[in-house]
Length: 482
Ligand SMILES: Cc1cc2nc3c(=O)[nH]c(=O)nc-3n(C[C@H](O)[C@H](O)[C@H](O)COP(=O)(O)OP(=O)(O)OC[C@H]3O[C@@H](n4cnc5c(N)ncnc54)[C@H](O)[C@@H]3O)c2cc1C
Ligand code: FES
Ligand code: FES
Image (cartoon, rainbow, N blue to C red; front, side, top):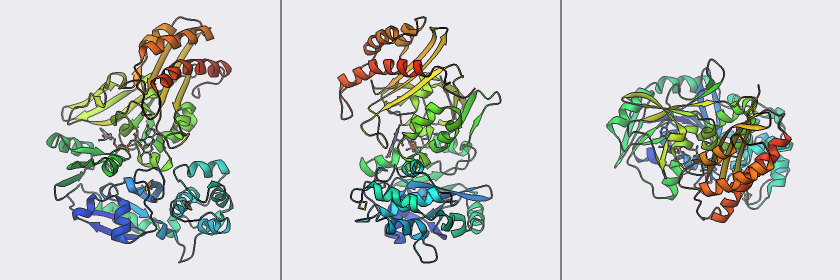
């Protein structure tokens, strides 16, 4: 058992014990390391000013992803290599991304600038040039309130990518990888004051710890928990970080190629990459989910276990009858997600259990599948209403219907009465129009900051019509590849 955190910052080893272990990474970088180029504005993952690159040992290499350092606690970066804006200099000179920002007047007050530069360096790692869409996508997690985005995006287009040194050239993987691999083959347990954190390596260790410490809070990507810690006075005493849980990160297809097996700590970015070629509707939904920084840290398990009635991924899981694999001291069991939630923020997970896998049957080529997210802003916003619909037809008759709504009550709702109404009916505008009335009678929305009860009722009705019009036009385009 190791009793200190070990990680690298800009190629230098750090060993940390005591109260610093429980700081947000951004605070450690600014106040302990003195790397004040990492800025803090919102402290809740919304603005990207605190963006850094996190490098993780994968096989013989280290792979890097951009994340928000304000919502990563220090104990989440054990065994990783952190690169800050200071670490992106090339032999004391500005790098090509910074040169382009200067040439295109990409900064005014400069507060957001380090975050933009880090996000672009993540995008251009490997020297590949990017088109305007790729640049915009990579920067959806970065906000600027004075320069405006035109000159920042122009900077991205003007970067001399052929002159960029890849992160592996700036920080050769081998020495760092060797040190991290040797030191991180042990579990870690640390405490300071009334706080304690445990970092297991295996599911067995995690379950054993949870059985002995039922109040321990699991922290996977931390994109929900750490916002609560920063903003809502949430101050748990015992934490268990899944940053180094082995064998849980992968996303694979089962042998038959019909069911997707998503590991308990697989990130949303990994799921997005899988969905790109296999489930375009899910890929589009994940493109709208948070930002690259959020998806690079956040997990599917975390989205499920956070149990928000407006979480974006569960409606898809509901219409596919996905199963959750839950592992505890009594062994492993499976629960269909449609039976998982029992009330607002309540679900069927015992105090010693963790989500170890999500099994998602994939849509077949003849399924008509649509996923909808309604939010005030297109990107980086929490939904006001979500919906997932799956219909299979026999001729022009609806043979099977699966409908799920979020944001219409205390839990995500599989709309069984609406499904029953649709089944056996002709695929027509009249059917979907009448189904809207059934749907409204099935839900209990409230009015809140994201929308009124009336707005949500209207969405519950109109989304069925939208589904009809969109799928009528594209009935020849399958929901997934055959
Ligand atoms: C700026 C911002 C934008 C966001 N945008 C969206 C969005 O567009 N759509 C959306 O749905 N959400 C959004 N979120 C919420 C969040 O990113 C997601 O819910 C994410 O999937 C959480 O995953 P995580 O791994 O970070 O969870 P964590 O914060 O680590 O954990 C969340 C909860 O799940 C529990 N948990 C985690 N892993 C396990 C496990 N394996 N077994 C049992 N319990 C577990 C934790 O104990 C905790 O209660 C956003 C958050 C932020 C900060
Ligand atoms: S300070 Fe805004 S995302 Fe971290
Ligand atoms: S340059 Fe001032 S906020 Fe972007």
